Picture (cartoon, one colour):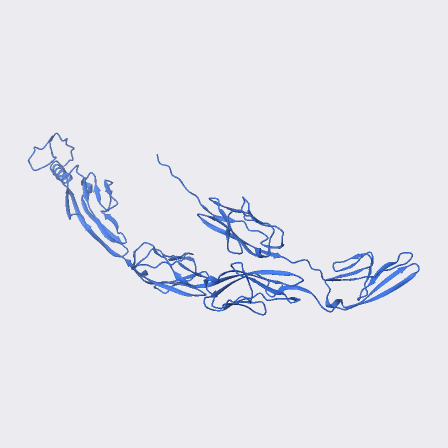
Length: 506
């Protein structure tokens, strides 16, 4: 019993989401959806802003059965891109969310102006603002508040708030006023980064890199740097290659791969505290991992696979140049050529014009590496090595076999030509022609031709059926004498040894 199994696969597809940008206060929770379909069911992975991958739930990160990711108590360090990857054997699909975490310590930066009053009946309090706006107690605005006891509160005092404020106390017996002159001498400001976003910096080995953590504020903020190993760095430490600039920048002289990692910087003053993340990668010149040990050969008509896998930081780009000068500088499918993401080049249906030097170049911002792969295409026209004899006498009842075996690259196609086939012929895959029950109709000239795109070779063989030829002569002779055609029964075979095999007497 034969069982035929058809395996159907479908690459993953993630449904597009209307919202991919989230702005969440620090300490809150957020959920990113990743509804994916595919056959087989895709596996879900999440890549964090730190380039780390998670496939299972952890203390703060919870992965749901539908692929969604929930983050509890978000922090400033969580700001960045979260990428969902849905993957199965047929391919993968991705969706990226942008998370901005808003954080800030409590800010107390206001002014209270009292207006205590006495009188009978109890006076009603009103404040006249600099722009002649009248605010009756109580009043609650976003920045200006007049309390029930008459106290005026101005939150987040600005330089423009410097002016005269008038408190009016009034009852049935009269009114009195108090003029208060507000002078703004200094503005407290929480730290603010000149570049508030997390960064990823790639630097060439041996150069000097400056990590920018410049911040402004009042009073001027103190800058704090935490190295990838978790230790805090200050200029008091004697490290020749490290230096903190007066503006809060962190300078690394002659960086190496050891200096790569996550650098945390913070700025704080008595008003507030902020922090950001800078990821440093030290560039590495591309290195090609796959190098052929010998001359590359390909059979004409078949596909040629050329590999060029390379490593480097940042990610390496691969460019191929074919012998005819054609350049492939990105993954593509282009009729003759296919270039895959992993750097493999496929040349389909090769011929002698595809021979020559193929050049692979791996490049990034750190440098360039290249290899040259010489390729020869093996091809030659057909040559029949085992052909049929030039003449064959077929005996009645005995099958006739005509060989026609040929060599050549591409593999030759074998064709037999006789004119009108009788139906008794059988052609084997290797080119042998077998006439199972030869008759008079099978007599004639047979031509075997082996051909491919480079040429052809042929052999000719003549077959004559002894059985059919003998009877044909006898019947013709009788018909000529009696001028009529008769069907004569075959009553007896000729005697053995008379020179005619399998004949009859009449």
